[in-house]
Length: 410
Ligand code: GTR
Image 1 (cartoon, rainbow, N blue to C red):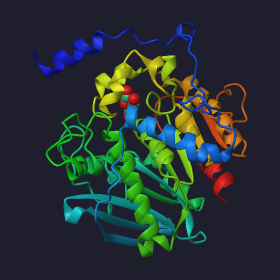
Image 2 (spheres, rainbow, N blue to C red):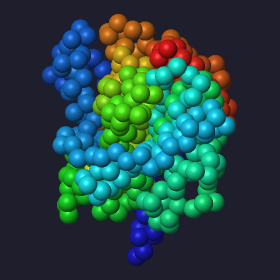
Image 3 (cartoon, rainbow, N blue to C red):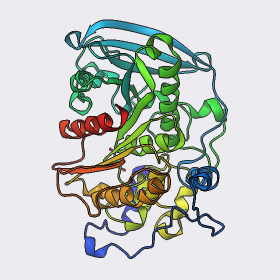
Image 4 (cartoon, protein in one colour):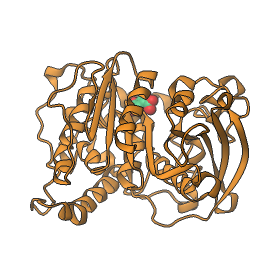
């Protein structure tokens, strides 16, 4: 039997995808403030010292996999500087982060605003197609790591995702923009963790059932890029490391949430259409489900997460608690009307049910009681919008992310 045939069989054995709100099963969400031993967290101190570490551990061991605590040796190499990028509005820098003496590298592309006070707040996120897809600027290098197809990156793709990054707008509003290709950290393939960062920690072996998959690796990469922003002198002079927002779309939105939850140096976290395994509540089983995502993408989460295929109620948490782990730092969740696969209502409900933790920590949480209408953003400590259209990052999304960042990082 071919591999494709087996995969199709496995997928067809799954229940039909539900897009009917009336068929969402009844469920009880685990209480973010109730610890495993049954005691209730009543103070910010108890959240910080007891419940937050407990929840982080549960998400690591049961879902994303534990991130190695050891660090790899790094070196930073400036590949290029163009002080006159974006028609003079930005300085473009490309910095290569070498890990373990060159065993792996990640190229970070930066647009630093020329006309804004320095150091500037920044957005950082991984991209799907290589840094050269983020803008048509011919000076942006192609990645050396493979694409998801296994093919090398191509010149034809230059600038094809510029709409998803809005570099001119971001810079004109006084923010720096940093991005790296996610395949530099771990190629997005179910290949037994033979490439990318995993072998640097596991050698010939594979991660154990409670150790990181690809999302964990990508989140780790975001933290390593943040290390660079904070410590590479020429960058640190222009980027304010205490005001860095991490964002991502879709699987990289799941990644941004996990990065923001683990690494408290990220001042603000944005999930765009992250859906199942990201902002959407797993227990709703609306659109993509745990079983579907684990079948289609077995390498994204840890081995233990497969225990919850069609068994969501056994999860010791749900995704509202991932957002709660970001508290009291601001978090923003963006949905799209036609992106039903990602369950927009489930994404809103996660944002809303993180509220109790924000309030315990002394900030406001989610201002909207009900899911806001189309393109009427809720802009509290937790933000949310749903826009018209499908699964994508649009100018509308960026405009709201910038408004939200202005509110919290200025
Ligand atoms: C889909 C997957 C989603 C989402 C999306 C993406 O195929 O089912 O969970 O991550 O890919 O990343 O574009």
